[in-house]
Length: 238
Image 1 (cartoon, rainbow, N blue to C red):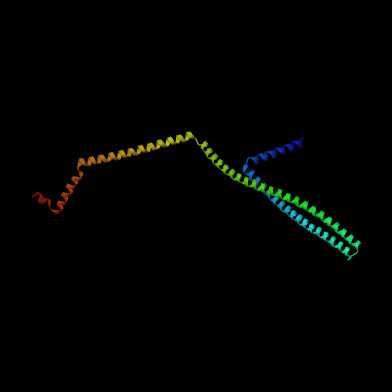
Image 2 (image 1 turned 120 degrees about the vertical axis):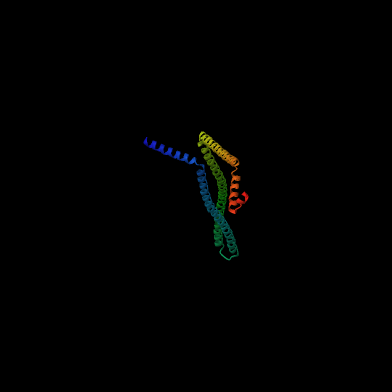
């Protein structure tokens, strides 16, 4: 019973871990691209190996075709020599027969190599299709990743702004604005009051100056002093 509980807990933990990973689509996509690139590398390596086998099989096929033709020519030459009496007829027949056996053996190798060449070429075609498909998927996923990153950036920025807006105390802001408006109005009124006082003081000084005619009186006094200094005051009296 404890074993089953433990297995269940392990499965639950793995499921939760998978869900946690699913919550981050960017990391998931990046991991998917990495996996695809690993698959691409494996397929490229396999493609190179299968192409090498296909080339080897093609070379074997051509080699055994040459051997087949060579054995055929040897059988013909040996039979002609036996016919011309250049060698024992029975021996010529035996050797010609051996050459034909070798020719048949070479033909079987040709057929085997031909079949292997076809099989390997089919494998090469399949691997090339897989590689093109993986490349296309990588390109699509990378485009999706760029789009996803841009969307996440915009989403995070929008979320941050909305959060800031949501956290603003509207009533406090309005109250602050009202206090600021009241302060500005008070300052404006105070400035106007100082202006009135300044204007009032200036008007009173002008009125007093005009009433006392202090400027003219000072001028008369200065004139008398100047006449005293010049000795002209006595002459005016005479």
